[in-house]
Length: 172
Image (cartoon, rainbow, N blue to C red; front, side, top):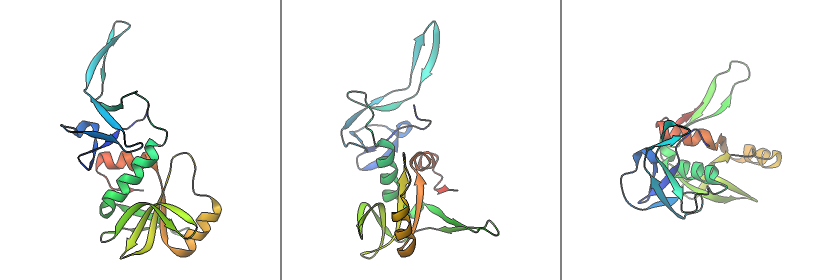
């Protein structure tokens, strides 16, 4: 079980379960219809406890890459809100930050021989990237190539989702 609420698409907008009011809900991971389960009480072994509201698939299975795809979609659709720490000085510990306020973003962008989780554009040129990790980080070869070409950051999928839900658009 995840420590954060599921995020789904509702009428073209990303929402958390606690924000849902009405309308169709689609899974970010597999694009299938989801259902809203209201907050309720459940009794087990003579103990009553609260069950939070959530989104569920019809078959109640969570798609495999849900966190990864959700985090990519969050970054791509809300890029101007985010402040990224992309480097920390080894001598003084100062953090270099960047915010792409006037840039566009897209998921799964081809860049040289690689696929970027989120490509950041100035006009039609890729000027940055956000790589999302859930189970593994960017490999050494891709890291070296990206470091030599563009400004990029690598973020943990769970942290992106957690920050989005808290409306705190800065991962330290």
